[in-house]
Image 1 (cartoon, rainbow, N blue to C red):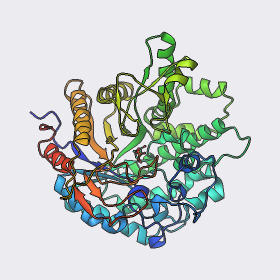
Image 2: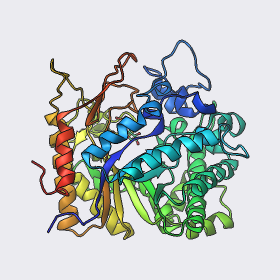
Image 3: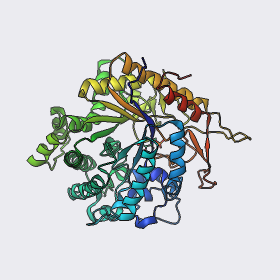
Length: 479
Ligand code: BGP
């Protein structure tokens, strides 16, 4: 008997802004991710601390061309099919469908593009798994409403959802409402189109926006269930357990509190209500939520069918400010973590912890008792192209093997119901945090560098053949 259930969904995941390019084609409107530049100002813009609502010729914007998948998707899907993918997770760019974010009529060009992409997948027996919103807020709505600061974003999002649900209802079963919804707390502009003005209460704004997204997600789940009774709607969390830096009880408590920053979202989306501690926390922080009785009812009615998450690394924290200062490392520049002395890190400082994936799977299942889906996991690394064009990426294979082994233990030994595994970036694409091309995740190499130069030609790395074997044996042969 195989370690993984029959029909386990093996595949890969991408996001529109990190691979499509063609940012002005087909009448597409401008989106938050289009104006997040490469270089030292990237984080400031992503965090909403530096205003950039238009493209400035002094900057380079990686999303504009990315890997030009808009024009290469057919050949890319052929390669995914060659690896035996059973699922392909991608996002729809909101502004390809509604260029201004809330247009009355959706763009036929945009819908036709995604329909063709979906048909291409289905032709090879690959299930589409669609992220409705992956770091994507229409610029027109940021100018009009200030992004998710404003309740009116909910209706705009619902309009967009209705357009894609009606069009793709016969073809798509799996949907995610918001990618890494908790990243709104760390990259509010990139995730939610939020810019902070001098003197604003940033916590108030972030939690208010979070609430609007949570309500929008619940309403989207309800709508999807009405239009597509067979569909499976998921939430999506940037996961990774917080470990206490020591076994000092105060550190244990600090780790629990840090995890709650994330559970705030999944508790609301999976259980349909905010936990008591969340209300208490907001009260203590002076956060006054605009939350109506109708919002609370909708949250209850729109709980998700499954929990999906990304997992790259575990995190750790301490209650002791001196320890925090001493061991704080940039790692994932977006999320705070301390250096865990037991773990090695990637070239970008992301700490590698396969056991942490098993911990996360168990924790999420214990908490929600709903099926899980790992929709991102992978290693960003520098690849070297040999003279004959081959790429020997053993480090990537090692990383993925260790994580798949941990995941198989969670499934086989712990009984966690897992729907599938889509590794992040099966084809090299633009890094969300750094904007680099050099930080590569793919089984498929794309000839393009950080400066934007290269032929965009695709080629197979060693890991390509390895993953093909993993899928063909349903995860039995990881050698
Ligand atoms: C997640 C995002 C992805 C992806 C991934 C890897 O946070 O959902 O969009 O980019 O992280 O991160 P990075 O690209 O920064 O290496």
